[in-house]
Length: 440
Image 1: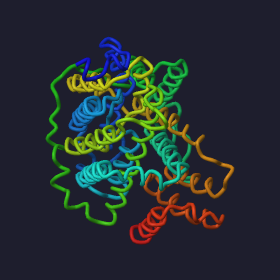
Image 2 (image 1 turned 60 degrees about the vertical axis):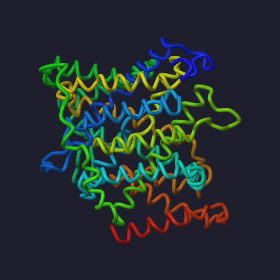
Image 3 (image 1 turned 135 degrees about the vertical axis):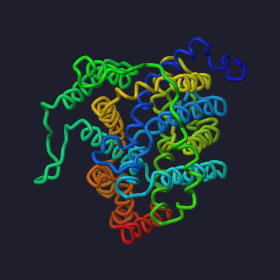
Image 4 (image 1 turned 90 degrees about the horizontal axis):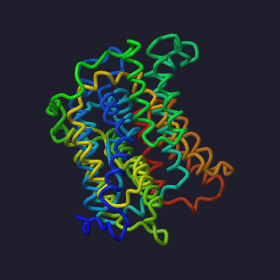
């Protein structure tokens, strides 16, 4: 096994890799509880039965998708990169596709499956580089930041910090509400932990918030910590039974968004983690094709189990910082996700007040990508700004992407830089215009 994972060449050992895997798992373990909360739409009042997904089934699907994805990444690409259902794309899945567009979650799962299959084809065909290069880097970074604002906005709503206001659309909530106060405590403690350099700050912030909630009576005391694994039957295979429903213009936009976000989120994570680990040589990432294949295969697997897009987690950098250098780190993470299947009773204490701080703080971290946008060039700044702003304002990641991709060719042409626009951007611009004409 040492030879398979190239321990000697990478200068690592079992102990170091195990500690790195545990560190990465603790850094991203919050997704086990946040993902079921989002996909079940349990924070939405008066939600009709059947609109949201089964919380227990999504918990199992999340753990299995993360386990399979991480193990695939470790075995196929030999990278210390862990995977799990992505935060941000799950919000798009639940709040935009299911809640706003009214698409059944079964059909949305089929769209996730389709995006994963397309990703595999693009990876195997070598078209990945072409597609990545045709979209300007500023728009890629704007999309990431916009998703960060979107999930932070959802967190503020779930916490009751931001509420509906008929006069000015939104306003400050009742800060004397016990659940809201608990969420504010959670945000503060999580920020403090991360500021102190605690790698698993988001996870430990959730734990401390839940404990304080139980002590103060805001959160119910769990009846058990370890229990039987919930049934995955409500979600397993639903993507196959509704695959025939994805062949519409509306679903084409949804699938394109799934693909786009996963595509560039994965690329960014690979570069970040590989750069930190010292894998990049001559500006090239070795085994990039294997890593991308592992990621896309994880998305397909997750969709079959019953969860939104599975993607590489930037929290993997915490494991690299702890010394992880080989795929054995990712395999260890996968093992911990399998072990977590027995802790489903803890879902009962993960209330919106407990998950909201995680959404808000992760949103803060994602907005850091705005520093990569050249704000001095208005032809770039305008579409980037609207991409970021319109996601939370329209409550739709797809709409933010569409507006930015429509405006970009227009501003570039006005500046006389039309020769710099890749033909694919014109095609995307036309598709998104049709999206607004026929679907809005």
